[in-house]
Image 1 (cartoon, rainbow, N blue to C red):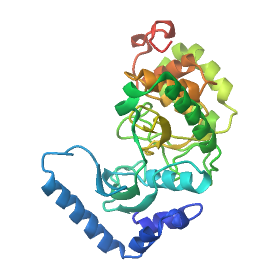
Image 2: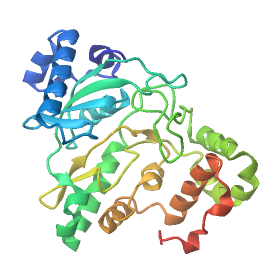
Image 3: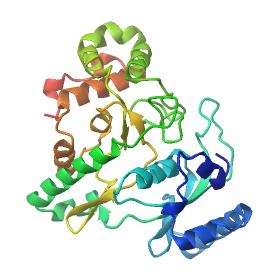
Length: 315
């Protein structure tokens, strides 16, 4: 997408009703003027804080309003708009999205798009910043709240021709399964995705088949669900001991039912591990581990370098 207006026209239903009144007034200003203002704001922030926020791509410019700049795919604001459109869940509102450089990748249209994303904030703090202050009862409550959150997300309809795809209808960013240069391509269904993953394992498939074929067979005929794709202690937001939302929707999309459990990152965060297990109890740690191994093998790692499930710290 080259402009925010183009993005909104292509949405299954326009997000205008979800944008606050002042935001609609801002969007009525010509795109080129908004882009100049974003560049000026970013330049000003660099001057005010020359030794801070050097690596971050998100900066607060007004109370409750943030500006994100860098490699931002159209799929991220699409995901925010879909969440607001089809659920009542607490989430950021994508106010504006302007791509200012064309995608550099040849395989995926929206990959490596340099853009500005204006959005509202999710209340609270990251789980990683508050988990030491949470009681066991609060952690349990957050896990159960996340379960309902994911249940509502899974009901978001897919308007595209592909069964597995990003919120923008194209390839999906999945760092666990792909390199920095490639996305998972869109697929018609879960079975097609599993066949692609099998093909990626190539010569290692005879070794991997007894480990992952039972998982493939279990989910081949199940419908994809809208997933976050990166549940972690830095993406789960908490306010007053309760779940207040999820952030960073770059990896979202319609994927197999096990996707959020497999892609969850709970290393060094016991609270996150407990929360995700409570939120997604229907999936097994063995499935998570074997799919993680298949992801590594699909990137041409030797299966021999991976421990057996029984010796991992997932259990």
